[in-house]
Structure formats: structure tokens, C-alpha cells
Length: 281
Image (cartoon, rainbow, N blue to C red; front, side, top):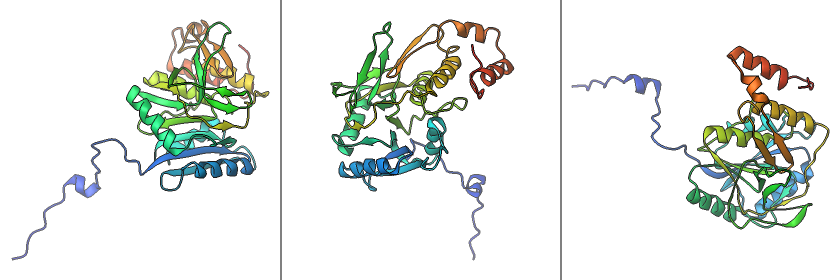
């Protein structure tokens, strides 16, 4: 007698995949780099290979700006994160070089950080600890044109990170703001959103060389002002220390948010953050 096939459940029919644990990562590191100069990027890749980052433990994404700025710092991170498979997503400049620490050291530092603080979200090699009235309080562990003796002995909690090297946990993702743009302060933006989401950010003792000392060009004041106008309503009265200076949010956010509605908030963002030119205060 022929057996009667068991009817499929609706879940079987639609191919439901039941998720019962954290996301699976089949590589340890995903490197995401805004590439403007192929020679610099090749130097970075060569140094990464020489320090133990390989196709066995890493994948490499290059956001292609070699012939023009297709991506800026904000949309590059958003574009890459949807395809990243690594347990850790590492955002770098194309002019970093792994001359000191490598894959083994980075894995060890991040595992150690998870033991110290299981709730950490972002890690980097330079950042601002706190604002101290024009006396920069920084945590830096890097070899760059500013000096080779900048070191931390252990992981340091910070309120901002520098963009040259930032590590994100794939299981605790943060994406950049949709209403900001440019090539400055996108790591500080990530740190603000991480803070709002309940995460914490650290500088870790992982040493590499950054061949640039940081470029504060003519676009920086506009990026800083838009950043300030966005976040002054969320961090009223606060001053933020960054590696490139400070931002003072003051009390203007009280005025911005007074009796605010959804329409009013979008109007404020359109006028003060997304405007193509600086509209003034």
C-alpha cells in the first residue's frame, strides 16, 4: 500500500529558517577601505598579508574612489556592512600599514576587550576620552607623523574614535547617519549612535602605522557644523572631545527641540543638516 505523503506545514512550504542564536560568521575579519590611491592600498594589503591576514581568516572590500568620489565616509560604511561576513568589521584608511601587530594580536586584543566589557561596540587606535577645557584628553596607540611614542597600556573607554582604524562587532552593528555626509567625523557619528544604542567604545593597544597625520581641509568646518546641529538636541550642554578638536553642543538643542513634532524635526534636518550649503545658525 502506497504511503501518503505528510502534508507540508506552512513554515515548510515557505522555507522558514528558525534563528536560535547569534549570526554565523565564516571569516574572522572583514576589512572595509575607502580606496583613493591604489599604490597606498596595495601597500596596506601587502602588510596585512605579511601580518597574518589572509583569505582563510579575512575578506577585503574596497570602496572604489580611485577615479572619483563614489562614496564618502558615511555611505561607504552603510554600503559595506550589508555584505560583510566577518565576526569583526574593520574600517580602515588606505594609507595604514600593518608593520607591528597583526591578525593574532588583533584577535587577542578584541577577545580581551570582550572579557573586560562584553557590551563593547566599537574599538580603534585613537580617540577622545573626555573634554577638559581645551586640554585634550586623548587615548592614542599609533605610529603616525605626530610621533611614534603614542601608546596606551590597556584598553581605554573613549567617547570618540579616529577614522583611520575602527573595528565593529558584527553581532552589535551600528550604521552611520543617513542625514550626514562627507569625509570627516563619520567615526564620531558612529560613536554617538553607539552611545544612544547602549554600546561603549574603546581605544585598544593594537599598533599600526598611519602614514597621514590627518587632513583638516576646507570641508571640515561644514562637516563639523552639520554634526553639531544634528546632535546638539540629543546631547544638550555637552562638549565632545575628538582627536581633531572639540565640539560644543551648548543649549541650542533646547530651542531646536521645543514642542517638536515629526514634521518639525524633518524640517530642521533639511534646513540645518542636509542643506547643500552652510545656512548659518
